[in-house]
Amino acid sequence: MNRDLRKFARQTNVQLIGGGLLGLFILGDGLILFFYGLPAAIFGLLCIILGLIPIVMIYPNSTSDIFCQQFHSGTVMIVTELT
Image (tube, rainbow, N blue to C red; front, side, top):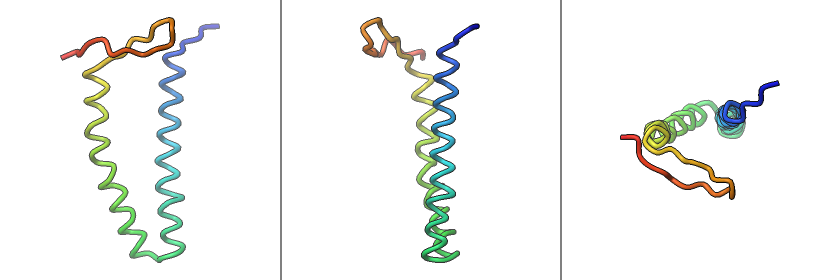
């Protein structure tokens, strides 16, 4: 039995981010729709999408430029930049 902890961590992060976004869109916008109606829900959806654009633009750059190495003591230290 092969335990690839990096693969497990990557899958867990994807599941957590996906669940959070799904909850944000369905639960958050659903509550806006329920309490305030369709025009407010459409505007809420627009605001959510516009609010996520900077995060989506920043995230790939931060993960490709810097990598971290975890030491045995449990501390994480930024080692170097790839570019």
